[in-house]
Image 1 (cartoon, rainbow, N blue to C red):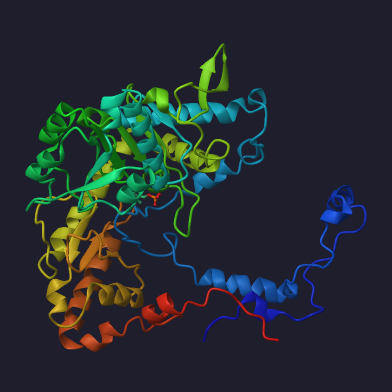
Image 2 (cartoon, protein in one colour):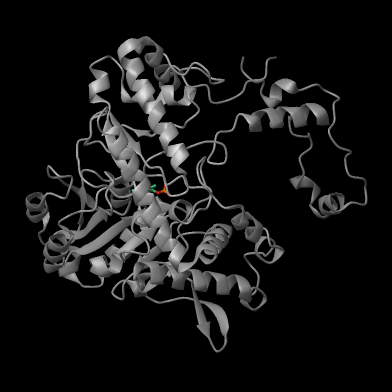
Length: 485
Ligand SMILES: *Cc1c(COP(=O)(O)O)cnc(C)c1O
């Protein structure tokens, strides 16, 4: 049975709290607002008793699925555990209660944290400078491409011909979307039989119109490109910049610095690699790091240390502001806490364990499920349900059936170059017991695809909401509650 909506608990006359008396701050604020701006009618909100209200939300919270409850192998998303010490520091009043319009002299600690986080990200990536403004990975990509554009525009007529962004066919959908929003044309680069960038396809696209190559490293197959050195040579020889989609930094940090691989600009997802909670729409943070060439174009303002204090400073060549105020500050506090609490050695251990865990599961599962690119992976790997599909069971069915067994589903049908893709990313925070348990569930589901395919095709059976009709959900969505009259 479906849970009632809070609106369906409406019992006129029920109240959950005493309205504040005439002398409370809210009433005093009300008295300061000119009466023409005050609503004459109270909003049409449900009237619910305190107990009904409490039970409603407590029931909903128990239906929550998250990294704090179960395994979450959602490839490309790095659903690692978010240590609770991050939450503790983010709640320090000196961080959580400051106002974005505060004078820099009054918030030196907060500015110092941003400054230190930028420097730490520079150390981890080898980049020369960072902006912390972008609110997510995709926003970081867009910000970076605006900088790429500003850079080529600054080179005059020759630079203005650079209107194209080269993007491999394995890329995350946000890459071409950011390129289009930035006013560029997108050129697709093919992958070769080993899952690397196809060098002939790259060479064909490298002409005087190629502004930037956007590479995800490791790529969305979880593979490190074996031709990295060659790619860098070819691309830079053509005057084309190199962008790294750094959403997969969890596989590299502490071991390889993107700047040393030849990247000129990159974004990081603090909400993936640096353990700040994500999902359900954020808030995220997608800092962008640059080498010296692009540094003058970073968004305004930037935290700078001058004459013994931290100030916010503008630069004349900047692309301007990309986010209100300074970005999602409390996400930065969480990420910085995480970095300090595990330290340099910890950062290196994270990538080592993330890669080990993914390879362990890949080896256990590749006999039963097809593995298109059978080589050592980094932090994630992509199986295919092609064999199971011959028995009538698709990647989607397997994802749904996993829910019955108490696991979250892997990312399905992405990247597009693997049919019936199941993209699995265990992360470093999971124990061997959890990995083994997931493997045994995947083995069971493969068995079921032979013995009882109907059961898998109609899953999930044990969740509060059973299989939804996705056609109806797309064609006839019910997006709004209508109060019965
Ligand atoms: C998550 C991800 C992005 C986008 O990041 P958001 O924070 O979701 O905008 C881009 N590229 C890759 C490879 C990703 O995994």
